[in-house]
Image (cartoon, rainbow, N blue to C red; front, side, top):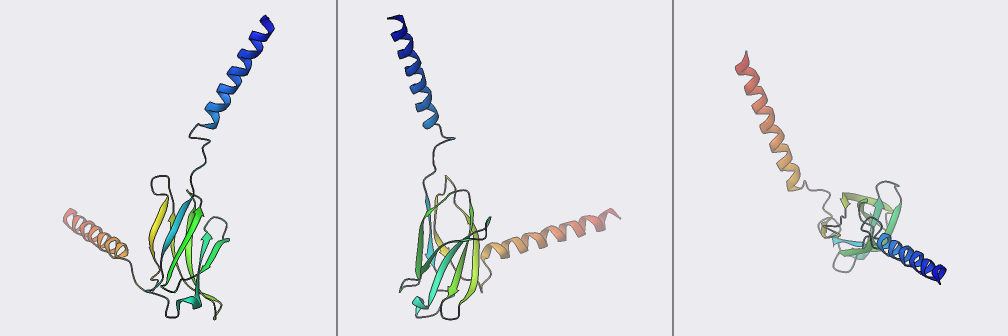
Length: 149
């Protein structure tokens, strides 16, 4: 009788431990995310002449490829989080990559990025802000250095 009680307790403790480890956030599998957007700024009609491919920055491998829709849109689902991805616009007839956007990294707080805009010929606003900030910092540094002499 005592052996039965001990066996039951051991089994109960083992099950409790297994359940707690399995539901731990450390071991929980993160839900896959989505990368989606448009290529209408860079691609020309007919959009079906173009494909978009997702490349894993760490390995350099193309993970998914899909033809642009008639409206110039694309969407990649089942993308793992915490990995940087590049989005490449590929001209199918010319067999070459037109341009690359990114890298984009999906996170637990932002598991999807649905507003990717492939416009490789244009400088993004963030670049201009960064450039302006660097110029202002350089001006302050030069001004401070001049006054210290």
